[in-house]
Length: 255
Length: 255
Image (cartoon, rainbow over all chains, first blue to last red; front, side, top):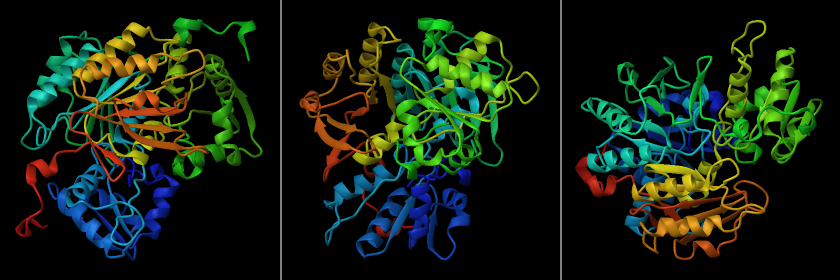
């Protein structure tokens, strides 16, 4: 399940219900803490980074033993989240999915992704075609990440950049912005959102020439506009094109 | 605000609260109907397609007149939604954003996007880098849509296709799948989700060779896997790569 960006009022009703009915809650420490107020009386297993496979395996084993288990991700569990790790492991184990004995009764409950929470704080930068690309080269070759950035920038897609930086990864964001700048002008709007809907939230609207100067960390999302994106009154938006097509509403054009 | 995919249990708490506090609710007819159970006692303005600018203008005018107005989108209001239309119009009118007299006090409340609701039903196809591309050429030149499909397919991004078909747009999806097939094999997994989390929901997992045969409409989302995506037990997933990196959990590798 996806806990959304962090603020409890961004949880969906079904995620709240599933949490309240769960017997066991498993997740990355920082995410389990986001849901702390909803976990009273439950068996909680919180673990660290790189323990993703262990968490998925533990959730699977406990569910197969008959417990009602939730595995939590922040944001949406399908977007760089744990849902795929569960399916990778189920496939590796040849485990059938369903409600019968010996099967895993798996449901994926969506949440508000971090990208959309960040975009809402910036304005509406994702209103036209966009790509989400993670700069983490822990599990993905850096050459492939560069290629994706280059092609997505050529395609004039709005770019959402996840994981711009972490301990031990300092230069990737600068290189990524260089690649994008081959195809986009220095005044292209860029939004930088740190800790969206969490304590310490920071929202900055800047441009491609200055984006590298904005402090970022692992919880920061960057949104690089396409060639049509604009900034108005401190907000960033990408037009859908209605004004270009229809112009201002005419008196005889009202519904 | 974003109502999420359709099912009331996919609303976030803050959207539910803002709806209950609203005096006026404005939106596309079909979306206003999704929220019907929450609208009692409110002034409701529902209108049709192509009335997007009118709706944004009306919401703005009523808000500037001191009413508490919500403008609803399905899914997330920033993803092909109304938030950008409001900002386009605010910019065209030179309207300042803020809480002072003569300013528009604008907040964008995110929701679960249709793409993530569809992905959750399919499994976890969006667990690695992906692009969202709309096939609607009502406001976007078809040549640009083709170029984006081609480059995103080259980039081995998972592809989320919005608006595959509508009245008067029948051939676009077939052409889009042809472009993608230049770069991806015929057995590439494809998920097709109609009316995610609404009455009449249909979930199909197929492959690129057979995707065109699956019935689609304007409310259908397609997800085309990348070169690593797989199908297991009827679900579609894109690996994050943990199994490749760490292999199966070892006894001495537990948290």
